[in-house]
Length: 453
Picture 1 (cartoon, rainbow, N blue to C red):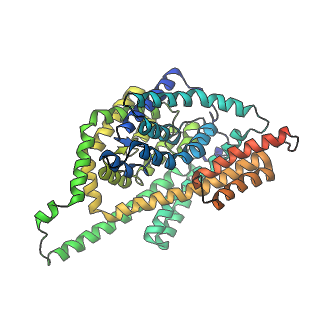
Picture 2: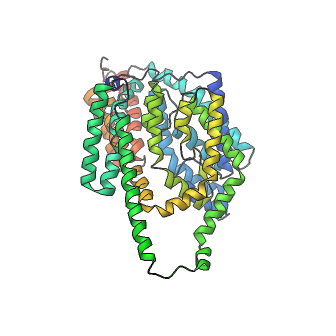
Picture 3: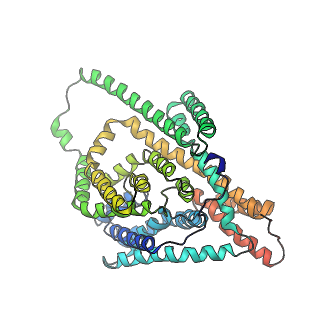
């Protein structure tokens, strides 16, 4: 695969879904909107902490909806829609962020799934029309956006190196960087049909986990030696811990709705198994090329950056993640048929919800591992921001040369100067879409000649 990454994905721009796929998307959007309405789960990690006040009646549904819209709109229109149009693969920002908003917005329980299903219908029936219209334009900016695949896939490989450097210093970061580079070169030479970054990412994540666990085990050993010389903690004081009480109540609330979560897990797994959905930026391009095993690897590695965040916010707020810990993504990609995928997804969500309290306690005993997840998330964001910006400028060059770079880069810089009304990660793809419209207008005004492909 490494030798053909620069080529367009095999089904890029193809948004013709089968009836079964259309019904899956519509039904899952209806279900996620219903679950969001009940404040049982949302996809946006930033919204989840605000749900505790809503659940406990200290804030209104409209106020919570406003928070969700404010934190999600940029990702929906700046990242979710452009990625789907350029790859032909749906993504969680396009499907689940809107159903977060629609579910919270709905004043009635019965209305939420109707609104969510309607959004699913808009996606499966409307995107293909938008894609056809864009493809007929003199400046085809959607095909140009396929240039984003190479920088996203290769730069994403480096996120473990960044995380190790931030947490354990430049020495270990240099070691990880040399190891990953060697593994990428080796993979390209020996296994040319495999995603060049797959093995490198696996080793990088394992290095980070090994370093974190080793440090925690050493610290626990020192703490045990120190505790031998200090008086024990009064059990009554520990029992009165308000956070422990809150976590216990939140976990119990989620367990009461276990059948609904199992249904959700089954639905997400079936969608992933259909191979019209990718859980991340890099994954979308891999799914588009038919590299499902590599896509599963990439999304599996991402899980380690989000488990502590999802677990702690779920225990603190009483609301889970729409995709859980996201293990359901890679499992779904690899399932042989939708029936097995549904069973596997339901089982995964059942285990996650039932184990939530245990995971919270375990993370409390492994602070370095918990910190590693924060460094992983930060590294993922840093690598993707650079990759998406670089890929967007490549797309701008493909569709308009220097003028395209001027328009797209100028819009990105303007967004920065205005205080980022569009979040940084979504600003560059959104600029490509706007830039494509601008170049087409200039063509119609006879002020621009499209570049020959």
